[in-house]
Image (cartoon, rainbow, N blue to C red; front, side):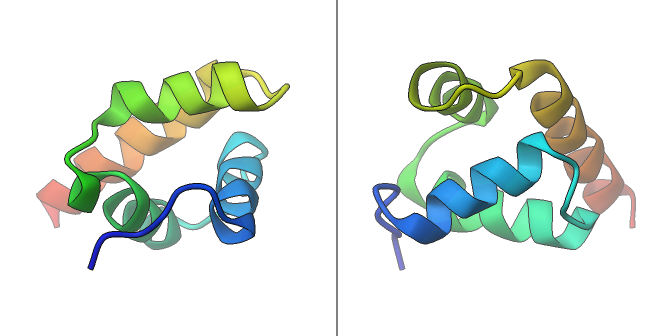
Amino acid sequence: MMQNRATEDHKLWLFDLAHGNLSDSEIVRGFVKYYALNGLTVGNVQDDIIFKTHYEPETAVLSLRTALEQFIED
């Protein structure tokens, strides 16, 4: 089921991602829910952080990539 990214839940996920408040499984779950099922990529997460928030994208994107890499290794 595709999720609308214009929700408070999505904003909260971006905030938590950018501030290191999520476990790897929560990161992957949010990415799949808000991006992958909508045909979007890690680059879209970065764009959302840059253009829709005031958070630094580097930490968030690194956390996302690390969580995704760990997910495929398990």
